[in-house]
Amino acid sequence: MNEGEQAGASTDLAAACSRAEFLRRGAAGLVAAAALGASPHRAASAATPATPPPSPGEPPLITAPSTTPAGTYDLRDFARWIVEEFEPSVRLPGPAGSYARQVGAAEVELYGVADMACVLYTIGRLNPTEQQRAEWAASLQSFQNADTGYIVEKSPTHSGLHNTAFAMGAMQLLEARPKHPLKFAEEFRDVAAFLATLDWKDRVYADSHRGAGVGSVYALAPELRSGRWFDAYFAACDAAFDQRNGMMGQGKPAGGDSDQIGGTFHYQFLYEHFNRRMPFGPRRIDAVIGLQQPDGYWHATNHLWLTLDAIYMMTRTLRYAPHRGDDVRGSIERAMDALMNDVYGAEGRKKLAGGKMAVHSLTSAVSIAAEAQQFLGADRVITDWPLHLVLDRRPFI
Image 1 (tube, rainbow, N blue to C red):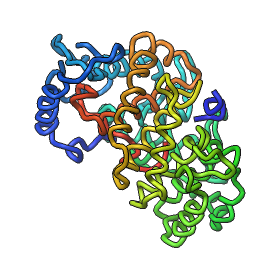
Image 2 (image 1 turned 135 degrees about the horizontal axis):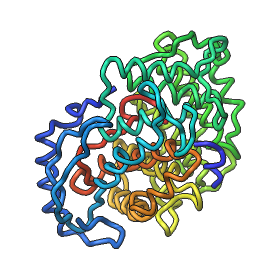
Image 3 (image 1 turned 45 degrees about the vertical axis):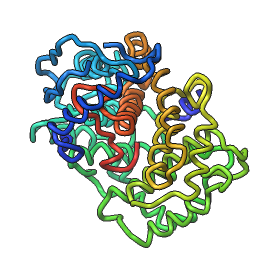
Image 4 (image 1 turned 30 degrees about the vertical axis):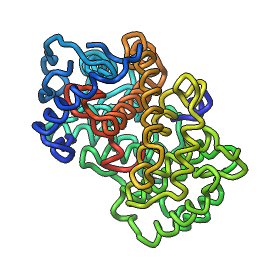
């Protein structure tokens, strides 16, 4: 998520449910889903039995034609497109983990490698051999500056803290770590003082890349982990909340704004990682629902990342602050209705693939689908294999 966007390893499937349980839930849910009202944007063709997905390079999945009940979102074609068309289009010659960040680019980039690890993990396709895992790790480690420890992209689009946290998050999926010491981390020992330098009025979203970035780095690096450091971190974060709307920021409208949605989200996944609860939950849900536009999105141009941010904030807050559950469900359905046309459908996929940060954008698209499937159910958000959000494994995205 760069500022322009703001303006405009192998998955453990049994951790969520067994394959048999996934099939049982899906079959039961299809009956209930048939009674739901149809939306012109929802899928119209029935979930087939889930089959273990092969890794990239293996023969494509073959699924029998079927009919999907109304009120569902069929993402099977979208997932197949990722494996059969998109992933090969950004994969470059060389060892495993060699990816450009956009279609047609010829250089391996951080937001190609790290994002593709996130995408493949989410759809259950990050299944490297030990040799491939080592190659993925080496690809990510190649971006690290040995003098500072920062992991940085070749052509800058994000801050160094965002780069480093995002790369370390991808490394975690592969059970890898940075090659060199994170010397820069010493600058942030007084984390409360650092957070006080951020702009909580006009750049809550933009500065959250650094504020949440440093928190994620300290969470992901065993040598930096300190309960005392994180006590200070969360105390400073707690003080940044506006009780009127349940989001972080100062001098904001009573009902909140999209800058707060994007910013607060980046801290929420750290609260989730540490099993902490953000304050003012019901007001946060009210604000996010109230800020949704008639078209289903939360921003005029940032249709992917801010949608992920908004949905995640509602679903995760709802877990400990039961409030307006039906309205949250309706809000997510409106967003998914829009995305079925604009992103997950054939024309939307073409547009997504043509972006300058296509692989990074795809991370947000599959993450929205994963969170929607977790909340609405696999009988409503249909895929050949269950989706798993990377944020449930480690902080930062």
